[in-house]
Picture 1 (cartoon, helix red, strand yellow):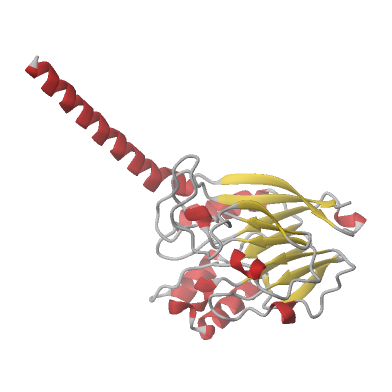
Picture 2: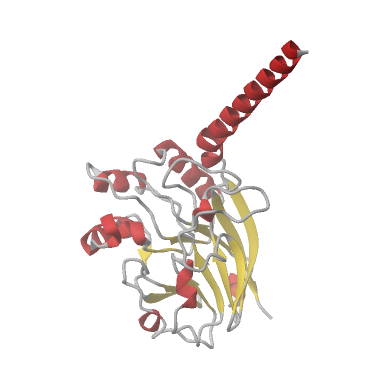
Length: 283
């Protein structure tokens, strides 16, 4: 009986170790690159008839840099380009700062990024501002690279695509956001949506005139979470904003994209995401 008991315990330990190793390999080697395309309707008030049914693709937190595979990013770009989107919106953290050859690396990876038939727009995240989010010169150089690649970067500005106003906010953690300045040229009686990297920005003052969707990223969905539980680590003050759709006061809706890339190559129950929105006219 003693021998049987020892064998059973040994088998249990071996099975536990094997399962743990398998989960670790999955979280490290598989899920960080197991991209999910999330398809959602995006209802917009006063949406022009020409944009009803248009496809807007949101790409967020790509984090080109030493921790994300170039081959993976290139494959994501190929898949998104194949969708032939009408609008592509990049919601921050295009790259993660590195010391040697950083700007050449970013320029090479964004030489032919996914672009929209009608427009390609983007905003900055905290990682565009370098170490400590305190280097505007890094952000300026990355903005120039993005613009050269065909991404129109909005920094507390509004642009217009066939009658749809797109409000683009600068980054919160870099202390560059100015909601009032961004909305200064915004007409609340016309169709609009907003891009803001950090979802905490939706709780700032200044949004009174804005009604509609705000597309965000930054959280990576927490990257790791147990089934049916919230992720233990989310880089936001309002820990409600993990990933997905959130109803907000003032007839606003927040969408938090889980991101394409990662800061460290581990994901568990939080697959990387590209969001494919179909524009609809809201009632």
